[in-house]
Structure formats: C-alpha cells, structure tokens
Length: 159
Image (cartoon, rainbow, N blue to C red; front, side):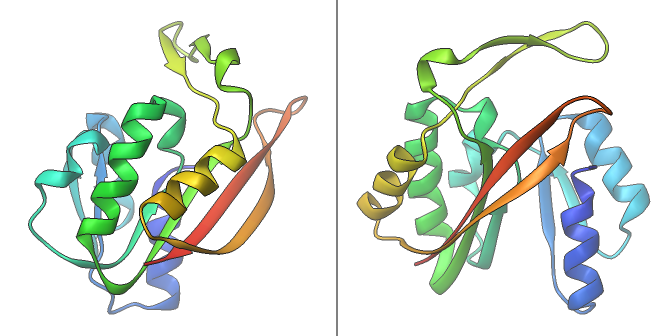
C-alpha cells in the first residue's frame, strides 16, 4: 500500500478538502505529488511537526510510529494535540509488538533502518495523558508479500 493511498481515499470522499501531507523521504513526496495533484506535499520529519503554525481538523499519522521511539511518540502526540482544532481527530496506525523487540530491519534495497514496535496499552495511556479520548480501535490485515501478513492497528482519538 502506497502512503499516498490515504490522501487519495480522503479526496475521493471529500474532493474539496485542503490536505497537507509530510514525509521524510524525498521519493515518497515526489510520488505523492504525481499521484495526488489536489493535495500539498512537503518533505519534513514527523518529529518536527511542532514547528507547523496551522491548526487542523484532523491529523493522520499513517504508519509513522514504527520509526519513533517512546520519547518521540510522546512528543508527537503532544504536538498533535497542540495542532488540532478543539474538536480535532487523530488517526494513528502502527504494528503492535513488544517495544524491547524493536530492531534493525533490511529494506527492499538492502538498506537498514530501525523499526520500533509499540504496545497498544502504552499508546492508549499516552493518548489519555495528552487529553485525547480514544473513540475507535481497528485491526487491518496487511499483506507484506505473498507469504507474509501482518496486522496494522489503527487508533482514532478525539481532542
């Protein structure tokens, strides 16, 4: 699933939406711009969203948590609270697992990156700590390849 699929889905439901998308990877930003000309795309590290000056109706963190430590997750959730309008919605997707099992993985091109697993209960506590009200938990099967499936957990919370 390409990350810009979320943007494409949102625009199919609300074509007049004003969507801004960030990604740390320049190639992902380039692909997103090619596939979704109605949205704005920027190269940015998610750990820097606290520098944004806009307030949003919703923030979607589509599979960003696997790249963030517990400390970074705490800061991200606080930043999201500060950036959301009074009735704003936060969407977070991740792969559940034991944080101590976090490790380096090899990408398709042989490069290595560190992947963090996060515990659902810990994230629920973080959301509550930052005054979010969890409204929904979804579990979605994701096929990594023809032999491997993983479950993505999605949290939806209101400010």
